[in-house]
Length: 251
Image (cartoon, rainbow, N blue to C red; front, top):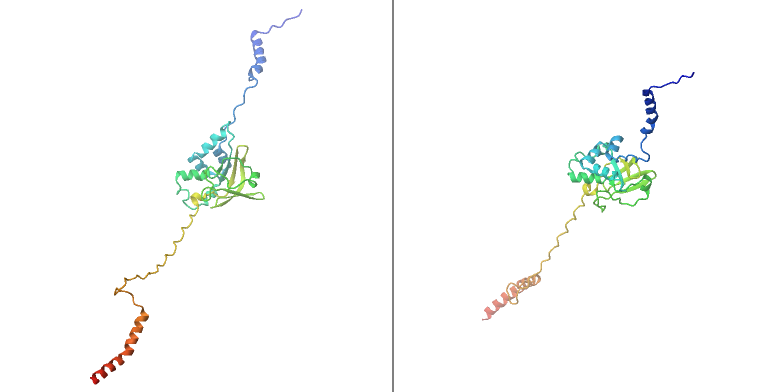
């Protein structure tokens, strides 16, 4: 006689739950992936190290927040290239250079290190100068930025300083950050003013002799005539005296 094994109800329930758990644990098919986190420029520089001063300027001027906001906009194709000076680059500036700048000038200084497009290292050799930065006007004496290459070396000149690109901190389709060994000082803020033109030599005034009216006693007398008259008077004086004496004797 066969014995039937009767499982308690509780065991059956446990087996059932274990069977359906993998099914119910799976998420719905085709669920959208979590959106990518925004690109944080200051976070990238903090991770790279040696950019403390530039990070402080990015934060105090709010330029860093503006960049991160624009980069996180999925509908925008806006990209940026940033030249990031190291702390050693800022330390090499003349003492008090940053302190003498107003808040607006500090913002312009930061913007002068940012180009509103992505430029790869290979593109620097074919790019047209001057580059337009977020600081604006590229006219001579304002905010021109020029890039030259020699082999693999990339140099950046402002008309005040010449900097070298040491390496790429990050480079992707929307953001390129390059380390530079000098703070990029724009002409508009740090250029030497052109010397004022030297005043012209004063014109020498030539005196014009005045013409006295005819018959006036103040008419100028030529010096040669005066000498001649004096000479004639002295020469003729003896003859005049002799003639006078002769006349007296005859009389």
